[in-house]
Each structure stands twice: as structure tokens, then as C-alpha cells.
Length: 329
Image (tube, rainbow, N blue to C red):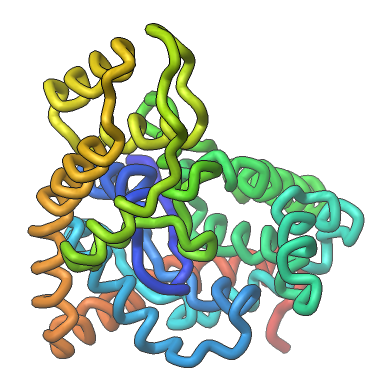
């Protein structure tokens, strides 16, 4: 059975991009593989070093994970900060990670551009911590989106480098995993890019219907097609992409037909898209509220998850320390 590891940062609510891009696959994976799913609260500090409510953010994301169908009886669900073996392996891997290769990562360059006042060491070594999260369970499969593919390749490099340096065949080189399907990229409502929390262009799973309607009606469009068969602009194509994943095929076909005949009314399309999003997220939103209110259940989940994750992580760390040469007198 394959070992699968994946995590999501605890910087706030999950959105439709998370749901369609990863979480639905997580739900499927847990029935077929040995899965470790974690809340990456250490990672969140690289962009939010002084969070106003770190615990609240973790609780929110954990509740949303579970509400979407992640089953702690089938998968190991835990908090990154509950596994102290992870930062120790991170430290050891950092000794053989080089500044030049870390500075060249696309995500680091982007963060430097976006947050020039907070270019911290954790941001630079983000790929090393991600590698530690994965290989500490000796995972051989990792579900990743397009924006994380370079980081996973670095994880493979760090695993291979460790094996070569210490002349062992210990760490597997994990492969990207997506059920053989194309990786889904859910666009945002601002007309460009992907959906994300920091971009402020997302529909969150916990959004109330009124908030969803307000956000969708503000979505960027254009003046409409001027001739039949005109290629869609990026903002309009984004709306059709969103409709493709949340609406019935008949609904999508209806608006495609009106677009091609130059009779489309974007206001009507947005209203329909909002209602379809509300229909999709409604059951999840109510489940989130139920789970979030049950502190005893959440405590039970994270304690059981931490115990299982630490059992796996401590076995790996014992081996790694021995391979490097740390031995008791």
C-alpha cells in the first residue's frame, strides 16, 4: 500500500480551489492508501509570523477538513506542530540544503516580491520543511497542485542527496499523485490567476449564502462578445470554468450557447453561478459548524492523529540519526 502525505497551511478558511484541487482527492485516497493529512501551522508562520489567532485558524481548517469527508479513522489527521520530530529532521536536512538552490525557487522569488518587508529564513527554507513533512513518513506519493510541483521536485532532490551522501537507500523519492487526472486549477473571481485566500478572490466553504452572492456579483467580466464564436477573455473564461465545476451540464450549455450567440447576460450568469455554489457548499458549511462546536471530538482527533504520526516519524528519525552517526555513549 502506498504512503501518501499532504498538508494545508493554517492561514484561514478553505476555499473552492482547495476543495476541488485537493480535498476531494484526499477523500478518495484515504480508502486506497496509507494517508497522512496535516495542518501546516509551522508553515503558516513564514507569511504570518504574528497571527492574531493561530489556534482559531487551526481549529477552522481542521473542522473544514473533517466536514469535507476526511475520516480520522481511515487517515492520520494531525497538526504539524504536534510532531517535534519534523523540525528536527528539518534541521538535519538544512545542513545539506544550499542557499543558491533555495533562492532560485519560484515561490521564494514571488514571496520576496509580495512581502519585501518579511523575507525571513523560514521563507527561504520552506521547501526543506516541506521535504521533512513528507519524507519523515517515507512517503512515495504526494498530491500536489501546479504551484507546488517545484517544491516536490526539491523534496526528491533532498531525499536523493541524503541517500547519496550517506551511501544508503533509505528515503524513497516521492512522486506527484493525482489519480492520473489533469491537476485542477480553480480560478479566482478577480479575472486573473488561481483562487486563493491571500489574493482575496475566493469563495470559502464556510461563506454564508449572502456573502457568496455578494462576491460572485462583484466578479470581473467584460463588455460581452461582439460576434459569434468570439474567444472568451480571461475573466469570462474564469466564470465558465467555475460554472463547469459547480453547475449542472445543462446550465453550462445554456450559457455557452448564449455566449456564442452574443446574447449572454453576465448578471444572469453570475446569479445562477452563485446559487449553484450555495447549493454545493451548503451541506459542508453546516457540517463545519457542527464539528467546530464539538471541542471534545476535535481534541480526540488531533490526539489520536499525533500519536500515529509520531510513531511513524520517530521511527524514521531514529534511523536518520543512526545513519548520520548520532549514537548514545
